[in-house]
Image (cartoon, rainbow, N blue to C red; front, side, top):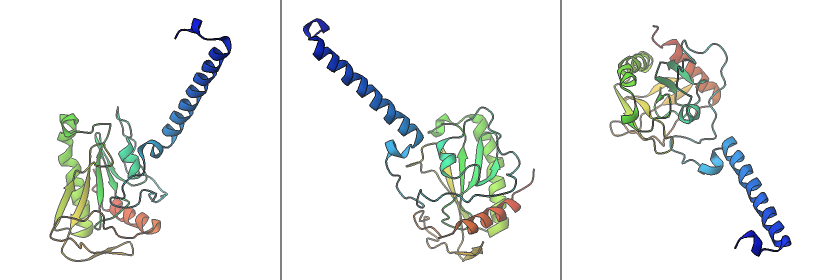
Length: 216
């Protein structure tokens, strides 16, 4: 029905209703932008509670931190504590300490930008991976003498390209006042079984890994 078929009072009521609806939708959109969890719902607790914040650290970040080029910091990088948990930053990748440790030295290797499928990762980014993985494996071998290493490309919750990097070992390891046992050895890792570490211990573990990170 057009406007001519409505009384002045009815038309005014519809205009007021539409104005209120637009205002409500705008407010909801602003709230969703400020707090993504409002629209996305609670994250599954794979690998640890998402309420756990990475440890606040003092001192300088590793060399190359902030070298984003044309890439934006994505939600996956933020989820795993970038830049506070940063170990190494490259043109296309970052290596982060995983705030929820499955085995001693659990890391996250994350692609910069918004790619959600491996075919969308550039050839230049793939060409950089040998250097990145050589650095992180050198650091983990020096620190924990791992026997195997697993790269898990899951992305069931955090959608941008990233690997969970889990060093594996048949015996116990100790670091930062925490004891680590690879309980799933020699089978597939249990990413839901994490070591209980406080912020002080996580900061100490991060400092240890940074001290053993290869210099370039």
